[in-house]
Image (cartoon, rainbow, N blue to C red):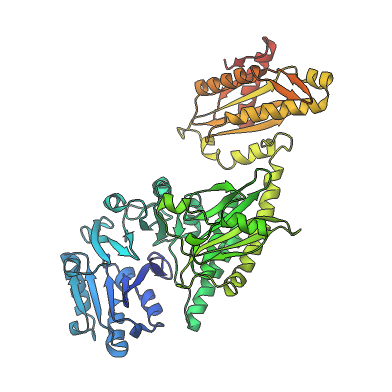
Length: 570
């Protein structure tokens, strides 16, 4: 697929420029001066021909074209063709290049896309960007390595590209951390990109002005940063590779020390980004091993949705079971490879490396998986694990820290989140619902097992624990994607219901009440029946979290005082 000589906007050090190689031809998409500096370090004589596809004539996209023409004329002698996306842009390019002293029109060929007859080219796609370039900004649809590639160029809308985006497409999308009328704002396109990825589209982010902010906003979408070219044989290339790694680790350090939201998913996103950068691979994912449930699941997956699979399946499961690294450069002929994701998304897996990771006591708790090394020979069993060993170690330490945090947020008896987890969620996934006037609706109910003390007094505390666990699991079974359930303390439980009005909360509480009332509970050798009382309230963002819980608790008190085994909300 495409690699990038730079993926930054006009306000960054290395401007956006992508390339791919087809049949000994180098195809560049734009050539800013920062890209030319990178190209000047390469042996361009290896190519039979160089093509430059131009999206538009802003300097941060075309400023290096004249220098590249001169280099090829006086040094390398490789022919070059500049490809304009339209007649208007072709005229502008001719005007610009003809006024560069020492850049003769005989040294290059300037053509319109209508005259480009190449298997890798499909079409130019007109889009909108800045007002002064009205009608002169384009993206491209290409065919690279047999795959459909859509490259947006600079744009403020995805609408022109939508007809060409389908399952299996590689979408290279410009994105900005700042809202403006000329670029795609990361928050605005978050849901659209998440939907694309869910439908089997691979999304890579480019032309970025603030990678840290964009990575934070897009961390749950599965989108990846466009892959920078970091390999190479020269000292300069190796230096840039180290610079790229240092940029990621520096951002990682800052987020660990300065991230107010305490978003641990962002931490794992950086680690997976670092891992795939180190070995120059296409994708990376980090898996957590839940031994109690017999599952492994993705904590951070660059380019794929979250996946949950049994721990006795797949290559990640194999690495954890055998406690050994797993490498395959022919996955489709490996009996342990699970091809369901590829069948679902249209992705082609060519090579896989899995490193199991352990906690400080040597107990394996997860795995780092890298997919599709950008080398025709795939992963090397000696060099690549060595390169990844430090990242894998940090992943293990981070996962152990995450596990400790998760444990502190959960009640051991019921498995539900506790009060600490409740307040943590209000600082994260519920925080948008705390803003007065946001238009978001949320409800809450608190429930209590009726006459629970009698259970403990009559049947013993072991029976009481069984009743608590059964009730917790029953309530949790009614918990939808937008809901959260917590053990509030003793025999009390709280459920938070996002995007649910008071009527919806009352309905769900009533369903739970009836279900528990009709359930037989096996409690330390005894079969018991129990009931619940509920208090429901619509969440008021103008009040504190405690006041909202108190409002529901007042209704619970009413239910208790007026006969129990009922739902009160008025």
